[in-house]
Length: 137
Image 1: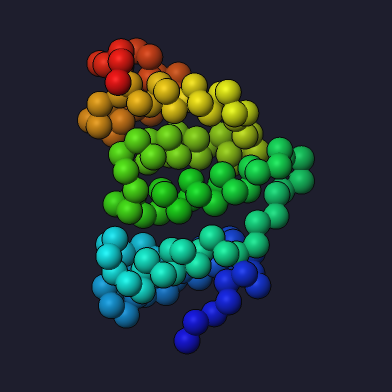
Image 2 (image 1 turned 120 degrees about the vertical axis):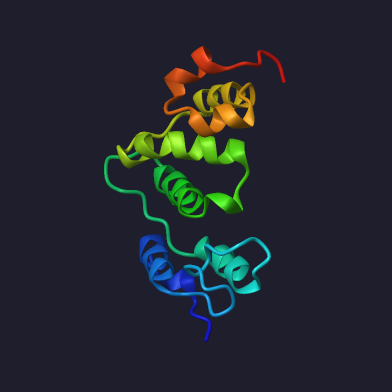
């Protein structure tokens, strides 16, 4: 049975997926290994759900929060640098902050200077300049 996720808020869909088990791989639905057809499909359907920005937050904050939550929930489905950026940004998004385009691009450029090992151990955007072993990419 396929449910139309576009009828529900994304948080409801995300919570449901976390509680459902994939019949094929046994992981939380949508969080299994890349290549699990049911999880791949559910992960795609996750983004059809309704996104309503919370009051007093910049437009788009809810989308950023949805993506960061999906990345944090299923780290193995995303690349090292994407994980680093979304995981570092998650606390900001939870606090209702959304970086502007220039700031997001600066964060991305800083993350691109990190090795994969550095991406795994960095704990804040402010920490990046001090641990980056590469100055050019």
